[in-house]
Amino acid sequence: MVETAMEEPIAQGLIKRAEFDRCLEPTKSGTAVVASGLSPEDGVFVRSELSRALESLVPDGGLRRKSIEALRLIGVKPAFVSRLGNSGAELKENTTEEIRNARVYRRAYSAFQFRDLCNEMPIHDVSLKYSVPRGQVQNLSQTCHGFAAGMIKFCERMNWGMLGAELEHMLDRLRAGARADLLEMVEVSFVKSRMARIFWGNGFRSVRAMSEAEPRNLVPIMAQAQARKLRLEGKAVEKLNAKLMVKAEIIVNSASRLWERQQIVQWEEEE
Image (cartoon, rainbow, N blue to C red; front, side, top):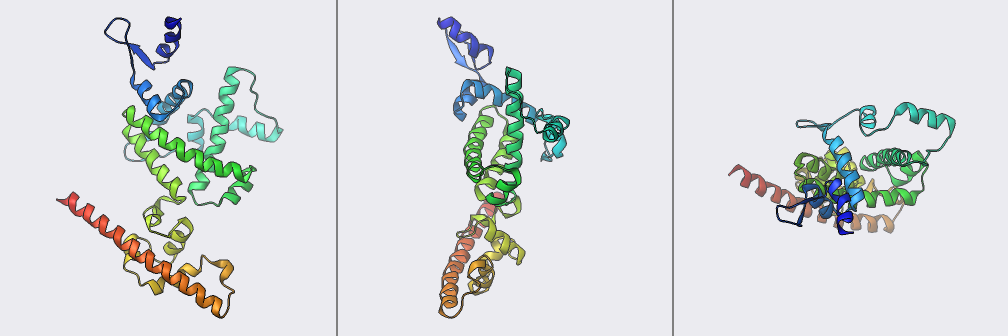
């Protein structure tokens, strides 16, 4: 019975026989599966998919492919998608191969939603665009966050450093809900993706610029994010401005501390 139980993980490349008699040891893939918290079946599937992803990883350009090329790379056939959309049919899932293909197509559909979330599209707009419940989009964001962290561990154990770095960058973007050019700014207290974009549009495009700003100059910019409160009058306006002034001071102080840390790191690297 034990020998029979060992056959499958050995065939999957998760464990191997050691030099000593009747001893087993994990392979690099097996160690990666355990570190990432995946089941053996999911681990084998992820290994095959990430191996294909490595084929498109260019040292000086990262994962840069046109959408059609990327879809074909993971096994999606654009012509089949077009026929499926025009006919209104559903994906067949009767055989093992059909179940695997359906999994690929659903993952690709979720990937497009994930891309729009990382590009600062609101959850409500993503829900309407892809005709999926809003809660499903919210769960996608949370699930991808946890899954990406596991995949980074997987890549580390497989010694796929470049792919791990790409995934870590996307994890930062998902955590911030912002484009790559705003990642630095969303580390500042009270600055989320929408606020960072407003600062960017008003000329504050770096942590250094925010650290050198006068808090009173940030207040009218921050007010742009309070669209519902722009019609306030009298004491309500004064109360809002006082609240924004406090936040502006915190933002400037936070940006100053962050800028100091960046400078220290830069000096240490130069030494």
